[in-house]
Image (cartoon, rainbow, N blue to C red; front, side, top):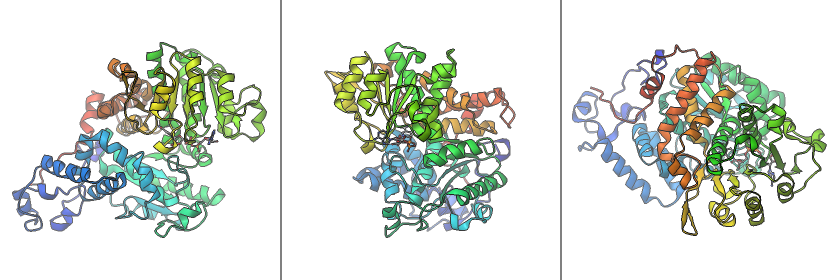
Length: 555
Ligand code: NAD
């Protein structure tokens, strides 16, 4: 398979380095697993201790070292160092221990890692494009060591998880997301490129940190920012024409604007808006299998009317329209409470554009508790970044109103969650269908064990990206997210539902990603946005392209 035919497992066709250069190439390095024959042929003898270890033995050793670290941030640093030394071992380790590792390489630990990204810096990964380098972006992209980049995750660090503006410290997010593309969907690490657009930060405490690594200036806005992003997009399209761009953790004014401006100019999507939407919709679809209700009969109240909330509502509307409702009818099922209270028509003149479709005719309502009484929602979705906002009276009221209230506390990291799993189950007397953004352990309440689902975007974006890459889609359409959500929901088993879990076990993520990739690629072929000819056996074709962390022989 070559990189020319859309293969996603290529080693890039580059000549193999020798000796210490080979040991220093994390994509090729096998460390102590180089065989005697390879050591002789590749100038490695003496550069490694004599005993040859198998990959399994290396995994066991690395796992021992990982578990010896007690602090999650120490574990994160250990994994980062391993990734920079030996990517095959890194991916094998995380693939075999996904449920233990994902909370380290991604939420919640990655949030803490970003906060301390300057202080824990070891070696750079990805590209830093600074506003000070405006006018030279194409040249800087050409410094990247490979030319066949297929998957870019880019942030400007303005809204990192629920932590806000972290400036260039946000680089931990593109790195982490791309690791998940490889671990969860088998996108070859050689094709991935993390990028930070460093346009400054308005977070003074970040700027004043002794080890802050970004431009020490306030965030650039307006025309200068827009020109910078436009230059970036133009350069990507020219240098990496097959690349899919994931816009990640932009502040919400830029996030919506950039998505609308560029989604037809460069194959791209915004995970915070669209990926979140698909994973939350899948959770809602899963909850209907417990409650026995129809999607069109739901009344969803969102706490938080930002990227996540309105993104979920937009996809919910698309899904409900499939059930025969008009856009207006579908929108009337979605209500929002933001920091100013219920989003209603009388607030129109001051509302951000993305909230306007959901400003309904209703008297002003100031608080979430009053909004619940007024709207009587079937589902309450927290995407506000406002910790502990789902109080005992709120959850109890939801349980009075519904036999199976949906309570999703999606704000990340764990410290920002609107309520914990234990609170949701206990306060609803075991009736709530709960999901969260960050993981919570199982809860036993009155003799029954509940396994809270994690509405983690990782269920969606790796498979969606893989499907778009394999088809070489020219654009990522809304219908692809709907397909991804429905596919994810269809993979929830009856055993999952018995434990009140509305997502499949994370251990099934590669199977989930493959199924989503097939659905998304199919959609690309059906709607004519695929550039690569359709293979005879799509699922098998995609499965074979998935990167498997194994050593190959070099001699
Ligand atoms: P955002 O900044 O775009 O929106 C936040 C919204 O919450 C704004 O409308 C703001 O007015 C509102 N808000 C803030 N404080 C509030 C309060 N006290 N009461 C009511 N509303 C309040 O952010 P976003 O991208 O929408 O993300 C919001 C949260 O959702 C974050 O914590 C993020 O981590 C989480 N999130 C989770 C997932 C997931 O679990 N899969 C995915 C994306 C985002």
